[in-house]
Length: 288
Ligand SMILES: Cc1cc2nc3c(=O)[nH]c(=O)nc-3n(C[C@H](O)[C@H](O)[C@H](O)COP(=O)(O)O)c2cc1C
Ligand code: SF4
Ligand code: SF4
Image (cartoon, rainbow, N blue to C red):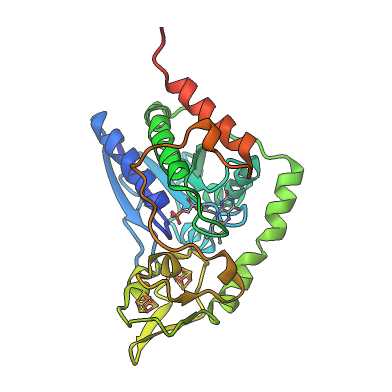
């Protein structure tokens, strides 16, 4: 079976999760291609694939604007025999509200002749608002890997794995979609601090091609989708993200360290994180 993974990732979490899923998919004897969603690339056509998978990070309880734009441009499939599709999302919190982020991708895919059979949630470290402890990040990554066999098993059997979204979650997600119109404006006001060394890394990692280096300094354009790749990856922590600056997170997480124990899980959304970890770990525990 052949699958194509279309993946958007600002700071690497979704990419890492999808790459690992692809590795397990191939270990089952299937084929897969993974294409990053970037403004300057259209990716392979879904033609010839049995399955498409769309990977994205949750942004304000929605899929990022870049993902929606990409899906709207997917070649039309056959509406009478829609090609199967799955969504794989990563989010910083294990909240049910994040499930609302699948509504618009599902709708667009349906219109274009694809049928979303299921959605998979992966909790990964936050890349905005606050920084998770290294232990939390390591537990998230360990547990993400524990969830993957179920994901590839479901996909290879074309099983359904639907999520329910109640009207309250729909409404919150709809209101916060304002981010899609606000960010191109806010992103223009991002700046580099004096500590910028003009290395150009921010421009290189921006999936939107929104950063130009002029006279050794980054200049931010009007295509920002708030992926935070620039601020996260800057070796000097020199990107100033305007209204979002207080929420800036900088520097990759060491994911392969010692996972946090239950008592080390912080107070923020503690119950929800523990529920997610326990559910994952109990499901994957070997049966006695
Ligand atoms: C602008 C923005 C909004 C976000 N909104 C949410 C959110 O609504 N819920 C959540 O759980 N995580 C949220 N996050 C966290 C990311 O979804 C999470 O860190 C994700 O794994 C990042 O994936 P990436 O590294 O592939 O970009 C947000 C991150 C950004 C940058
Ligand atoms: S990554 Fe940081 S140091 Fe390098 S050009 Fe961009 S802002 Fe300057
Ligand atoms: S400017 Fe920064 S936050 Fe905006 S899309 Fe580019 S990398 Fe992402």
